[in-house]
Amino acid sequence: MSYWQELMRWMSILVTAPLSRNLPVLMGLIGLWYINFFDAQTHAILPYDQGLERFVAHIQQVSMESTGKSVTLDGETVDYATGAVVWGGAGTNGQHAYYQLLHQGTHLIPADFLLPMRSRVPLGTHHRVLTANVLAQSEALMRGKTKEEARQELLAQGMSGEALENLLPHKVFPGNRPSNTLLFEELTAHTLGGLLALYEHRTFVQGTLWNINAFDQWGVELGKQLARSIEPELSEQGMTSVHDGSTGGLIHHIRDTLFGLSRG
Image (tube, rainbow, N blue to C red; front, side, top):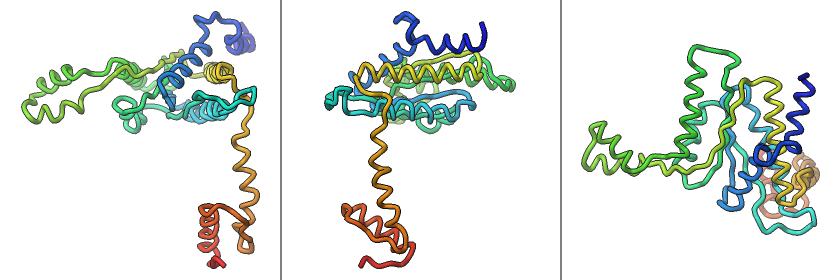
């Protein structure tokens, strides 16, 4: 199979694969399920390859710009949630940054782990350790740790009495936190394109199910329109037009700081 044939195969999965094995449809439905029935407001994408360092930022734009809509294709105001805040980052750095919130926080945050099974730059057992961390994190989110399991661990460490009881609640993990683990053989231009197509098609599926237009971005226009009128007001000779008190006060403060101008 040629490169282009394989590329088109990836691109056509959405319309050719049976629904039971159609990954864009399944991921779109899972995302909608948690947003509309479990009030999930964010979605974490956690790639374990430094080559995907900027992947999350791209999918953030794809998803949030496409599904951040409150009006249907028919021009009616929606009465259900659409879209989610997409965030995340590459590698194990996140484990010491935001995984605490994923495991023991009060918000339900669906997560996607992205893992190449083979490293592009093999370095000893580094990738095996990385792989173990991915599998461990997804298992921990799913299983959690019961109070009794935590108690037995602390007893095995020689802790007892009041010290054990005080620490015990903090060692419990509720579990039942949703995540997907996406495995691919190696990060190449080919697999990167497949991942991009997967998330783009997932976004299209969600937009279709929510009956919103995933291909416009009117929400960014108002800010740009207002910026065109504010920009000249920030010059030394600028004249401040009518704004709300907050915006007008900020403009005056900036001009006073930069040019020493009074509020006259």
